[in-house]
Length: 509
Image 1 (tube, rainbow, N blue to C red):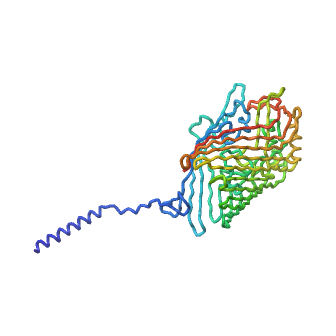
Image 2 (tube, rainbow, N blue to C red):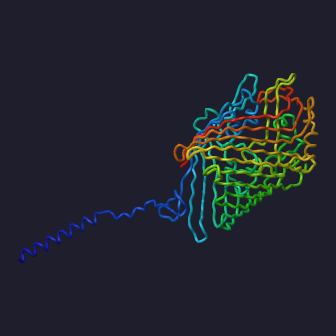
Image 3 (cartoon, rainbow, N blue to C red):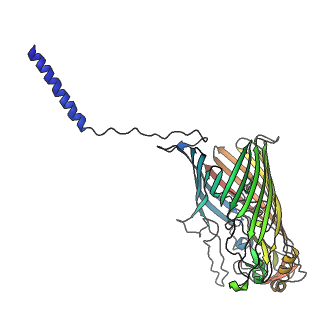
């Protein structure tokens, strides 16, 4: 019995020793894997960043599109080589874009801390630069909107930072939609970029904003925002006007000084189930450079301009589920970009044909400024007003259409008209029956139809018409313009029209 007991104890000791040796050879136990978890605090699509209490959401879209008879990509052919309406005008443009947005949120004792960035990668076919040389040599520009590249520059494109901001305790700091804008920015129901009638910074503007939330959908904001990138048109020194600049829609030398003051913006909004109402106001400092090349030449005093806007949205109207009406109106004095949103042109030169004897063709030209002045004089602020809107109807869960439009007027005071019309350059081009009036109206009307066969995949066709109602009349004797190959000749001043088509496929994620 003692022998058997000794054998059992010995065997147990050996087994214990062997298991100890094997345990010593095993690696250190790994930490538990931290799986990505759904964050339900801020809506669908948010996940916790592993190991943190910060939630993140990734999104964006991929877009492919082509525009026909346009000016670049999203506007009608109203200036430059497109406005020339000849063989230099591109019949179409194409664009491909990838957008990526990153939204993070963290709950703190001060409320939610949010960061948001929207980045784009774009390739756009180039704009024809038409050298107009005797040999017929041509070129394609690499300048223009973000992403505009020369045709054939296959491997390159443009990178855009649309939004990049922090929100904390009611403050917004960084590049975000202007507080002046209506929630639909430039698009009450359209894809077309050429609508006047209100402010719009669809790619954001640098700002420092405080927003107060009073509950029940009522908010108010006060904001200081950068004016240089989006909210300046022209401060024309008419002493620098030339015949060539006039027919291109410029009435002098653009004479901005440095940026000395941000624009001050205030906004009040009521956003409820029935729709939305918003009132916005902006103050804009017009700060010129010097009259001449040297600082001893002097300068005009600064003048503050302003803009006021009302916006209204009515949802779920009786014509059908999800149908809506969006409309807004604006008035500006010395702050024209709050009517001419950041993507519309501020100079117009549109050519057409003519059957009138002794006249080579027709021409409509116009220009937009915040103010005009002459050497030794003070700034004369430019007045504008206008509206835009859209009605959207849902034919079915997968089809909808919108009819949209805009109208705006640009008006120069009598002193400014005297400076422009009394210039030697304007007198040099005056022809038979010529009357000078730089005021003009600009209007657009469009129809868009969208088809969404599956969720987040939409195909659309957008047709837009633009009319330039310029107030000049009679004939002018125009100098030659090399970029459009227009000869020196007599042109009849006449209102002009342009129609474009934009086709788009977009996949959101």
